[in-house]
Image (tube, rainbow, N blue to C red):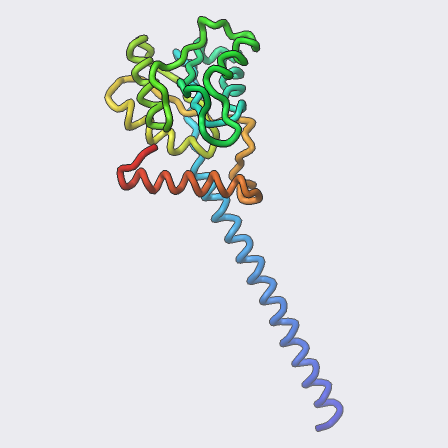
Length: 215
């Protein structure tokens, strides 16, 4: 083989290697982009928000940190409602850094909400279904016709489904509202262990609802 032919053969081999490398890089980029789209979509699906309108009461669902309470306080100060309803959790709720109803009531009062503007459900709750039932009973007894339900973004889709079921045919208007300052974001949830824990748990509970098991 001549020197010229050797050079051509070497160049062809190099081009094949470079081409294969570029193809692999493109494939990796496409896989990463696809995974990002899927993960972001998974997070976005969990997040539901109704249009905000003034209501009779603002409801704070239990099971979260003080972010839910602070969001309710913001809505109260923005005049969306003058009554804040808490669900009775007993001495302490289970979960991640949760506040119980007594602590939230004290903090709301410390932030300017009169004690007469804070209500706590009669029924002690352990699940979102319990909360929806307790809130429905309170609202029917007090003849309230509308509520803004505040919870974390990842919890809004399931909350909307549960409240729709529990409040069916009551004539009470329910608005589900996610905490605006929440750590949970559809663009970033998969970058933390906490994000994976809450997202997978919500999907597990949504699947359970399909089989008639709601919490």
